[in-house]
Image 1 (cartoon, each protein chain N blue to C red):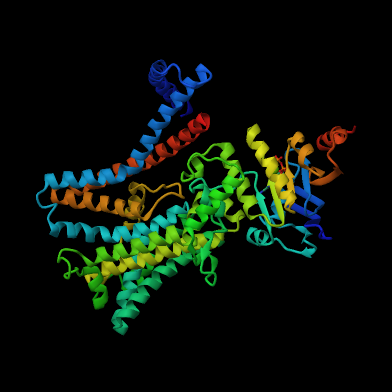
Image 2: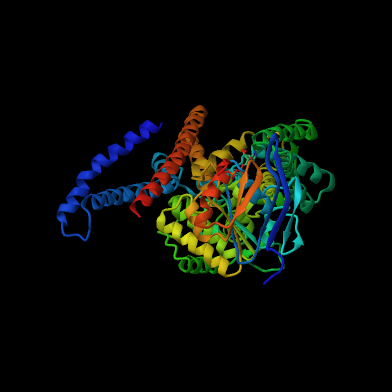
Length: 376
Length: 251
Ligand SMILES: Nc1ncnc2c1ncn2[C@@H]1O[C@H](COP(=O)(O)OP(=O)(O)OP(=O)(O)O)[C@@H](O)[C@H]1O
Ligand SMILES: [Mg+2]
């Protein structure tokens, strides 16, 4: 690895040395005191710009890819860009987006939450059961959100206070447990009927603006704005980044690391409950099969949207863009009658590219720093 | 001046499994005094200051701040008691910018009646304060907006030290503050230590750089294998003796 990098570097400087020399001959009387140093400086300045530009490109990457995807899909299929279909894309992406925002919070702290798909199912089943026995809309919503919070709390508390090395295992365990509970409570069958408030949120559209705009899109926007503001303006949000950037350092500066970690799993759980409201509202039922593999979509969305899987870096916009990318790929390929197996492969390839570009970004940043240090 | 030492540690003992990292260590540092802790690698210097700053808990021993017994249950408690520390590993957040690093764990935020974590950050206020601080300490950063991960070793160290200086009230602890620094940056850190001393802070400095210790420290204690093995006023005449205490030979 290191050898390759070194060759890389010398390759680049080989390309750029002549350019720097040209500049120098063009401007011989420059104030540079010593020839070689000045030339080195110019080499590094050019390289610095190059690396800087690459970094910007990498950061914009996901947005550009999304735009290209949309353009390609609309040129290939006349149906894609119709308002009706765009509404479909939005409502199909809504669940992924909500789960992805929760996953983002977890990933920001270097964690992962594998349980969200199962939590969604459990929450929908609990909601349908509560509605069936009480008929209360608000109570149903509270039960669904509460179920999500409870699973998240278990994840966070066992991970942090059980001193597990990584949240992978505990959330894998709750993935299994929550799905099992959902199957047990429901006897393995979907439970029909959800309260009006839930079906409005999940299945309704914003007729007061445009009939194709799903209400769930507004819910996503609301969640996105709330979480964004929280992350960027509220102290706790800053602490989430701090814990992800340097967990030990955060602790040694008096940031309540354990509480911060527990809180992100609780948020992820609550958002799984919100996603359950959308899903069961759209289908007017609770079912133990809802949200199957949704955790993978959510993780994929965060990563391909441009947040760092290594923690500490990422915004809500990344989760949204990633969710839309997955939504557009799925929808577009359906319209084009591309078979399901190919869709899976395409999404997998996109994930690999995204993670690799994150690694490259990290390396470029390192090099950027070294070069800047040398130039200063 | 205050009759009590700003910080006193008595009988500090700390064990990591089989390793006795601290063995009955005593230490006192007064307001307006710079105390150097010397010792070879693995002597227990970092462990001692981590116990003072609440990162580790002492197995036994007492800590007093201005004569008042204090249990450093957590770093937050230590910071609240006016003890600020620059750790050997700097405890910086590579993913955040300089301002966010300055205020990490001490964010300026309102309203005061809410729990600290739930307050709204005064971001412009923090940005202004951090610019002022950087100016005051004559630290130049290329772009203040870029993340600390993109900065050079010296700049990172400067940021960590500046953070400490900004919040220092009683005791400032610096674990090898000049280790990664060039001449000019080292000079700035040393000046900063002297300024903190003149402002009445008690300063504890861990350093392997004898010249720096000679210049700034009023007193030096030497640790070896978890014990304090000597104390000297670092003067040129005492230098040889300090060195032999560190390496453990006889003069
Ligand atoms: N968290 C820990 N767990 C286990 N052992 C530790 C831990 N921290 C320190 N030690 C051990 O305690 C002893 C003292 O370490 P310490 O870091 O305090 O040394 P130091 O004097 O700061 O050395 P240096 O000059 O290299 O920084 C060493 O033997 C070290 O291996
Ligand atoms: Mg040390």
